[in-house]
Image 1 (cartoon, rainbow, N blue to C red):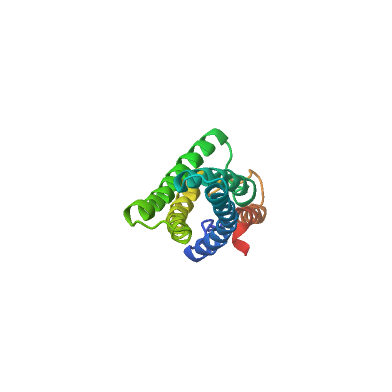
Image 2: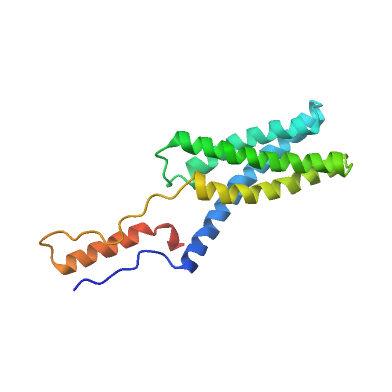
Length: 182
């Protein structure tokens, strides 16, 4: 008699795992924010570029640094079989995020008529918050996809004793959930 092992984590376990993922996303994103705001300030105030041009330039550099953090640190264990597809989707969703960010900055400057350095940074920050939520959902859902799940019911080895098969199933189930141990 072989027992059935539940391999799918519970909702609580998935939420706990998502909390860890969201924290990692925030850490990589925070480094991108430092790059983004620092470069925005330099381009706008030191080099004298217009705010919207400064925003686009700073955001493009931050997108590149964030990709490196996501791919090689946060999502290093995710499926990277199709790097071209991954980069294409990353750039697409990053571009949409940049449009959200730049649109908010433009709205702040041209519709609301706010133009001081502090007001522009506030508009940029608001756009960044909205764009970050969009990016988190899109990156985790479509860009850095999880590895395909193993078959739920692996075929037992012919001639193996039931205790050996059950132990192998337990080991497989434990290996599928390493990130949930936190």
